Image (cartoon, rainbow, N blue to C red; front, side):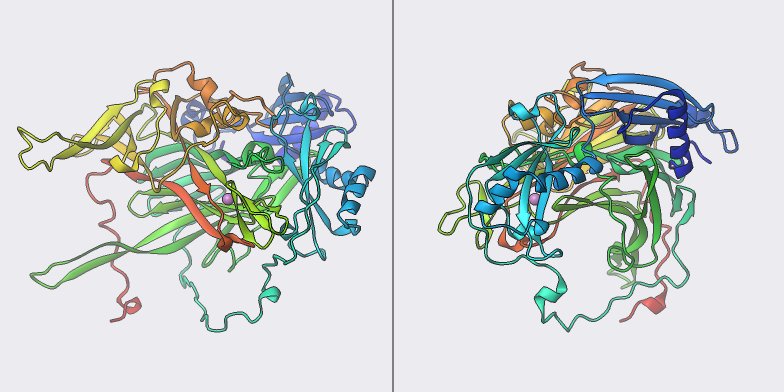
Length: 627
Ligand code: NI
């Protein structure tokens, strides 16, 4: 076992047993999470293969319906509870157990049944209730409780797409901890849209018949080697982990034995809606901190989600009753051909050289309510790392009465179906260790030189490089006009040309920041989304961009709070937080299920090597190339 091995079911069982032997847990206590307390860099440096491993886990306990939580630490090697700390006024992520209760309890409530009856809906079984995180909007129902704001849809039959028929105007405030309806709010009925929104094959006959098969085969097997959670592939080496909130995490990412990233993950995301109306204005889901990208991960299927020679990793989380809960095939890994890596034809000799690019893909897909998010890490032969989010699934919609226009804040995507404008904003956390822990971050971008002496043809431009010295100076936005990027350097280690070794963080496409006003509820709560870049010196408890407890949190936690100290960054153990995403103006083509939309970023070696590190990639076997 390695100190960063993924948590096992036995360890989860042991941790809960150790807690139960030391503390009595009240009837109805729920376990929010059991996660590995990741060892420090010092511990990892001092630890050698074969040494005993001291495993510590963090457990978050929900003792009851009030806003009391317990943060516990359990040392598995000594079978002791080393920390037991009551936290007051905070809410954990919504639990699936309580969300399921909300659906059953709401369906039995007389006010809810009456509101459905007004709309002519009597088939309660086919009503779909989606509990949403409530955010903070000053409703009396929010105070002192853990609540969900529930919206409803109706299906014609159990496997129908309910989102095609939103039950407009109806909102239920539900007390999750106490399993009771607080209030049924009815803003008035709108007729159900008439057309179905099915996306299954049987609803779209005849299907295309002229798509010939594509088979990906690797007769000699894949080129990677897996040992426990360690992956070795083409000079790359890393370990993976799986967190209930972040999903896949990458650890100790190195190339040819040289360290690049200590840890990388997507720590938070928020989906703020731009429609100020009563059905959509409160929608701003934090899908990591309120639901859990890891907890919502679905098992993947060979040949459908992933193509080729696949290695799957299962993920083991804790159920809300403290038992091991295995998501089979949660993480998919495979190699992909990626076109050409490099090529040149010598025009004097006519001789050409070309190499094929290949990437290692490590991914998982999370289904958070109506949306799907695929998170893909790519490692390339030339030392490049890419992160890509694939957004798909179904938009959050409402119903439009016949003859009513969609208005300024959304689009009619099907007859009577209205999709409001919104954003999807992600917050990555990149703990760089470029050839060591001591790193610094520069902003680099094009600078146009004024015409005149030294610039007689007015063509001159150069690269401007500005050191980000402390946290407040490192709150930065992208600028595609100047090709702005950020360089993470180790000033103590130089390449063969005498330049400090570095990686560059490159925004791959235009990426928005939060459009809601800075003083708005969602902008305060998702402070991370106000800037594309934040840099902090490493602190073990600074884990997720919106802080530890974003659910119904008033705001101000996370990156804005930590960086207010304006800590120095030069030659520190820097952590880079890159926030990126999309502003989604819905289209009819996004209905009833969205073709994948992409966003992400690149990490590219920039002086990390002395020359193209992929010159030693062999030419392809000639039998695979045809004139
Ligand atoms: Ni969207």
